[in-house]
Amino acid sequence: MNVVNSRKNFIFSGYDTVELAKKYGTPLYVISKEVIKDKCKEIRNDFLYKYDNTKAVYAGKAFLTMAMCRIIEEEGLGLDVVSGGELYTAIKADFPMRDVIFHGNNKSTDEIKMAIENNAGRIVIDHMDEISMIEDIASNFNKKVKVLIRVTPGVNSNTHKYISTGQRDSKFGVPIDNIHEVVSKTLCSEHIELMGFHFHIGSGLYENVSHISAVKALLKIIKIIKDDLGFITKELNTGGGFGIYYTKKDCVKPISYYTDSIMETLYKYCNELDLDIPKVTIEPGRWIIGEAGITLYTIGAIKEIPGIRTYVSVDGGLPDNPRPALYEAKYEAVIANKYNEKPEMIVTIAGKCCETGDILIHDLSVPEVCKGDVLVVISTGAYNYSMASNYNKLPRPAVVLLDEDEEKIIVNRETYDDILKNENMI
Ligand code: LLP
Image (cartoon, rainbow, N blue to C red):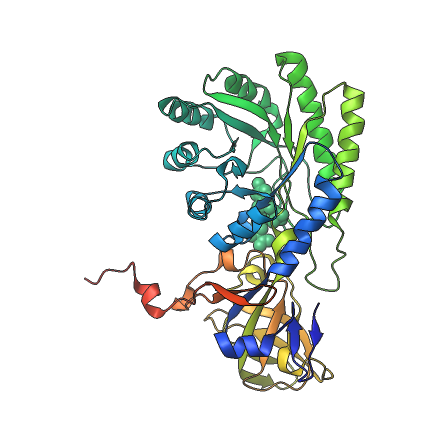
């Protein structure tokens, strides 16, 4: 998919990235619909059609716009939202609410109200107090709300500590030791229908071992709950977290690497423990959108510190991609207008923020670069736009969606007036 044209420019999803930079300016987020569709197709063929009673929802926190909601709906996936803002985006995009799962470790009353009023398909209970919040609101609306309980399975995962969530010491979910009382209280709530359980153990996982351990841990709980409380689990949501290609060091696996092992573990242990097989949901965000996105920048200042390094600065950085600063995330990049030229130098790609830590890429091999060249950072689809800020009062970039025969701006570039629009002069 990523090739060169006769002008030797870098082509992404059939589009000349240098032309895109000229037409829309930089920094620019570019998203390929084709890649998203390919990912969803793989999920359908290798998981949904392969196993009965399964569901896939897209974790909107990775990248959510109204246009993205539309694509996800067209592809037949549900949507995981985690805030009133994400819920509102789904509502405004007319996303089918029955396919929405509402998460969050500290949902407000207003957010729960919004979810129930708009008939969100599932609310995921994260802690004890939420049960009475949901019960009160549901009874006011005279509705019965379908819920899952998020469990912290006590499983460690091999990822950055900031994106590891399955370990016992986590702000997310009900610890295994408290699950009994949370289930009992949920079952006693007149306006709540407990459908099953949820776990999400972490993000950016390249091995399936943590998912397998979590499924085993959950099935043990499901068995105890069945024996003690007579509750039959109908649904098990196994979260997301599947790793993607950022650099050559990443050993990327197909979706089936995770889902086959989840399903095999489930069948085996349900059989051994004499449990009904629940409906299984997966909830990937990054795996669907990560490789579908690139970011285009224009190179500005180039500073060589003899014997130390060469800083090549671009017109964006930390505000449009905080991941290197937050998680020491690694990215690859190319010079779009010199794509097939031989590497001549090793440089450090710096952002334009007043922040020493605003370094996008350390030690990137590039051809001879100069001011005005276009730098393309690869695999920026997930958690870049969604985590972007206006630090240093930099306007957020536009987002352009590449479709088969046309490109569309799905998010406008912010203006300076947009940045000031909520400020009041004194
Ligand atoms: N389900 C739940 C309940 C989650 O909390 C998450 C991610 C997902 C699904 C989707 O995980 P994914 O498939 O995208 O790995 N900002 C961080 C990632 C935070 C992930 C938070 N939860 C980053 O840039 O790496």
